[in-house]
Image 1 (cartoon, rainbow, N blue to C red):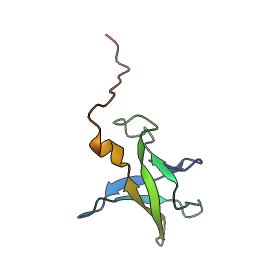
Image 2 (image 1 turned 90 degrees about the horizontal axis):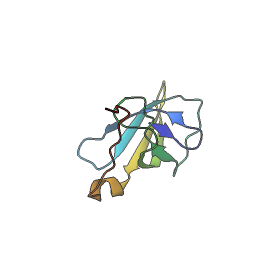
Image 3 (image 1 turned 45 degrees about the horizontal axis):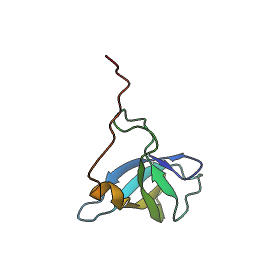
Length: 90
């Protein structure tokens, strides 16, 4: 994922037994702010770039990297229709 306007990179995962996400491996020299928007980066080849993931609610500094706790975008959980796109034209 990317965080904020500067597109700070991180790797996201769910936090067990909560509705929150964790973004790990954020470089320690990059400034993350509460409220920063988190979006997909497109680097995984699964989700295209720019899908809203959520907003940062907490930042924790680890010994080698930062970790952001993210409140997921609830719209994605309640949407009934999704757009699927492909660059594989027949």
